[in-house]
Image (cartoon, rainbow, N blue to C red; front, side):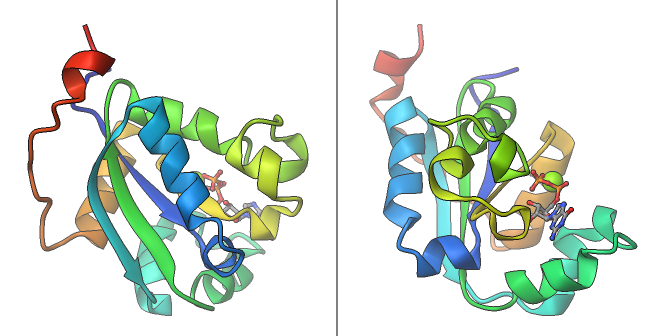
Length: 151
Ligand code: GDP
Ligand code: MG
């Protein structure tokens, strides 16, 4: 766990279409995380198959790729204390029916196949996903808020 920990967060095509981008960004900002990368991208099926390589073979895999390629996504990297685990808690359970109210999925979604957001599940997968979605690299900058968020 580190103050420099980074996680890959993505608003999926349904989250973009439903106008939830600002709300999702606000939650990470308000929590005290630092935005270090952001872009809107309409990903190809090939790119998404790499992102979801671990799920290849699952019965829902073809539908998942089609869903994720159906429109642009918002790709982001957020940095801060325990960012990966805390990001997952903020997203809620994979199946929105099991997501607690107050989480992103628990507030905005009902169906596992339309759960509006993605978050890395481990530090290693976060680093892999950041490299996949931001091959151009990440801009570093100082945020003066940090001294008010961390000891
Ligand atoms: P996540 O890390 O919480 O996003 O969950 P997973 O890595 O297990 O699955 C990736 C994504 O695949 C999920 O966010 C869902 O959009 C989708 N998915 C997972 N399980 C199912 C399922 O049983 N049915 C359908 N239709 N989609 C699923
Ligand atoms: Mg996952």
